[in-house]
Image 1 (cartoon, protein in one colour):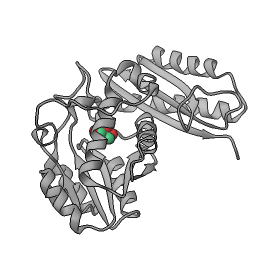
Image 2 (image 1 turned 90 degrees about the horizontal axis):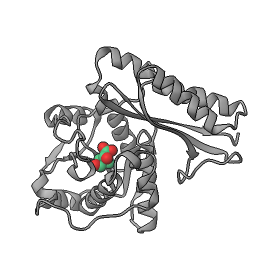
Image 3 (image 1 turned 120 degrees about the vertical axis):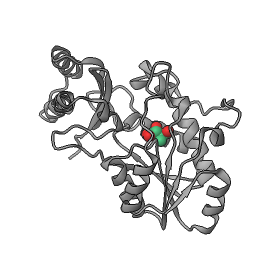
Image 4 (image 1 turned 90 degrees about the vertical axis):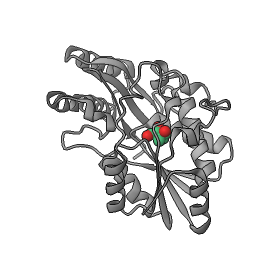
Length: 279
Ligand code: PAF
């Protein structure tokens, strides 16, 4: 497995590769990332995993500085998972002037859901993903459904800007408790790890109720939020949306997604569950 640190090396590696899949990550890899790699292998001859903690998608007071940088362990895991190359550039390689002057600006959805409390986050994500696509020139790129809004923003960007990359959505990996795997789970205490499963349990309750015909979406959202608040969570949002473009859900919609973000202790967790009523 090649470990590549510069754009020039990455481009020269790309020239000799055939069909390439990219798995963009910020490192601190867990089983969720490795499932992206396994999926990617089915779509291409070679898999490149990028590892870059992208400053411009973190807001003031977010965890950019404390975000774990674990390149050595990550490389071991990726080698075992069968990745062909790791692209792990320094900041000076991707942001040589220290700042980014040109950005990819997503539409209004960037200010909803997670975007309400993370202004500029999706602009930072869309910009770095575009830079990675320009450098790696992948045929396909895999993104986890755990970051559902991120996936929607990237799918929209690729479509709207005619980018020649196929986006492959990959299912969420969960712990036995139901907790969605995330690099940020490492911030949770042992007790919080157990309690964190309440978030998915509430999403499941809403999904079950919708499948049984309950269309009072706001009551479902409110009762899940109240339960979490009573159990010590600070709820950012719990919302039922249309699965495709994340517009507000209507009673007649068949493809829904229930999305949530909530803070347990000092850790902000996100999760979601899709509900398909068409069969
Ligand atoms: O999902 C992530 O880890 C990041 O947002 C991404 C897509 C690698 C961009 O920095």
